[in-house]
Picture (cartoon, rainbow, N blue to C red):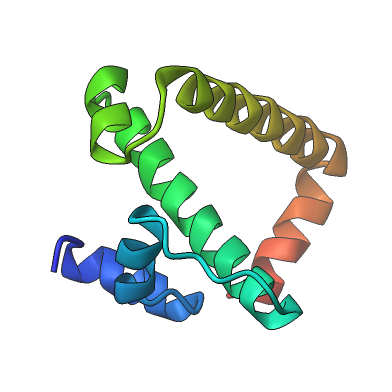
Length: 109
């Protein structure tokens, strides 16, 4: 297995099968039915999350591109989109205010 046990558990929690990921990377991606398309999208998001995680861990972008068989431009676009989304979430949380945010945190505890 190429994924760490922690990554395997995280993937399993969202419905990812490591064997499917390997097949998808090799170009074997059946997407004829809606169910197959949904399965592919779930795996693609997880794959992108793994690449972003390596980016956050400051792995050189060329190394990430090689590992995930993609180009640097796609990874840079993914980083930009993730950064923009994180900024939007930060502003949203800030506007919630601390009292409302504290209530939300209590709900999840």
